[in-house]
Length: 314
Image (cartoon, rainbow, N blue to C red; front, side):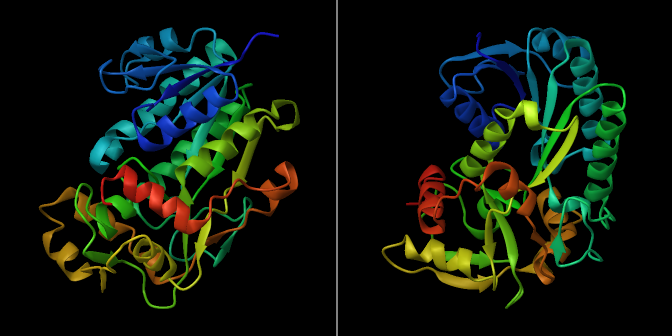
């Protein structure tokens, strides 16, 4: 039996790179669509030059694939309203042409500040932010495509963190990459729980699900439980547990984000997601546990150590 092949859009990003490694470890052939072939140094991957916004590039790269991993996002949160939906439309077109299943790393953004504290796969999506509305529309397009024969797998996660910096709170808010940690900026309101997702664990989970293709529904969604920070302090404590000298933990400067948000895109985007730190929103992974038996899980201290090493903070 020949090895399966996956095309990863966004392979140079944090989640795309981790999915590539997890697929290779299970014997998959992996292709990556990149704008610049020097973007990623991952070995054993066929890099194809192109742009996820160019339908011909995506169709060409997707030839002969079993899975298209849609892990591409506009860098630095910029131009979501102009780029996110055209990119998913290209991925859907490629899946229709090749018969490949689409794998999407889902977000908690789809659930707004009025959502319940525990979110299941059937919880109604009522986003309260601009990014949340876009992500809901993106998933609606995937659901619609599944009615035309496109197979879809969505794995929904909390806040990403991992060895590669990216658009996430850990590397953009709590610590500063390439610097020793002297101050930890904690965005959580005291006593409020928060969902975190360690990228290598997410990637292993996704690949384990893909290995069970014969059991998956044509349109299937799973919540990834990840690390539940029950009081909003556990992540900061895990960072300090990896330092020789404990860093000072301070509250995130929300007032500064608000003040500078008209001028700094990242601050504006972080501010939009503030509600996720003011009330607890936990992803119920019962369906995933029933399906796989258990969820891949790295102990928090170890996962944070690997992340800090990857960010060159230790």
